Image 1 (cartoon, one colour):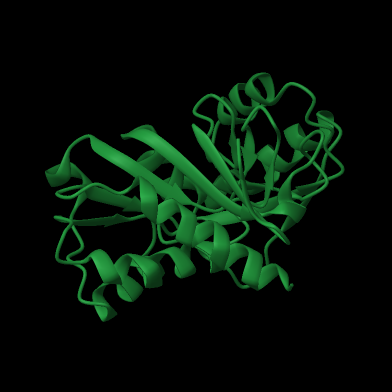
Image 2 (spheres, rainbow, N blue to C red):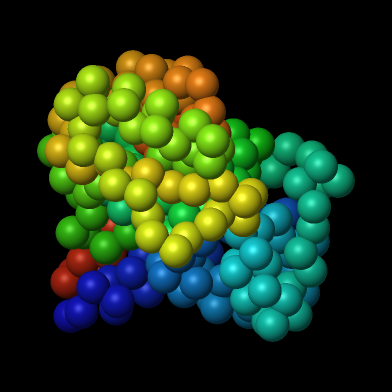
Length: 217
């Protein structure tokens, strides 16, 4: 079974958590896209969705799902998104698709965060996947120097601008043994908008697609 099929299984399993009348927070990326496609079947049962990126908003609209502004929607009952890495403690690395800031905003505004992924994303500790950090452009060099002091090797994501008009540094070689501590440390650097560690607000439920179906943590 391919990883894409496993992602699809996880996405379908997340549908069971949606209740009639919900406003659903929706993430960004290939796994989130499978969830959006599955959510289309419930479009008359839900009130609408809040998207974490322009790309997801567009896909929701194509399915005829109303896209709401988070400020108007208020606190959300549920947020569903993928991850680039996840631990059994449900700490995550996100931002491979570049939408980490809005994803973190929607996750923080949601009562329940369901993370969907294929089983290959489960790791013992975070850091093999390069950590995305969204940075205001004028702070690029300054932040990069501080990331080097943490032991990382930052690399500018070429020809990429976030939906917020910023750049991303992908940080290789980080050993993230204390994710909450590192999330705070990087987030406190002047010019950092968001670090792609989701540990202070981890997932509440982790659904992993595998050969047998899904495993839920």
